[in-house]
Image 1: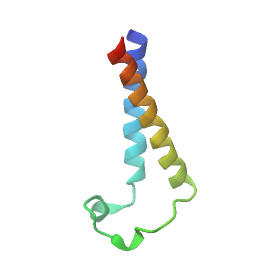
Image 2 (image 1 turned 180 degrees about the horizontal axis):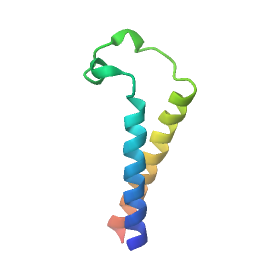
Image 3 (image 1 turned 60 degrees about the horizontal axis):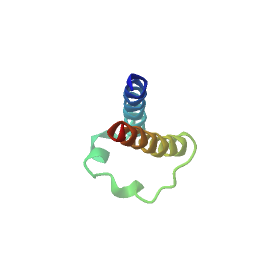
Image 4 (image 1 turned 90 degrees about the vertical axis):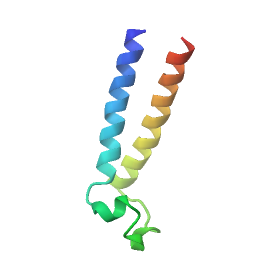
Length: 71
């Protein structure tokens, strides 16, 4: 059981870092909904990989959380 808790903490830290890396260079206007000129831009390169990593990590974090609740 302690092993699962450690995995969840590691996933939470990595997920936080990946989410913060996505907003790098966006500025404060992007955080609050400003800068609407880039709404329809396609994700490419590292930005796309970070986006996919965020989805995968969030699903893994949710799955580990469900395992903890069930156990």
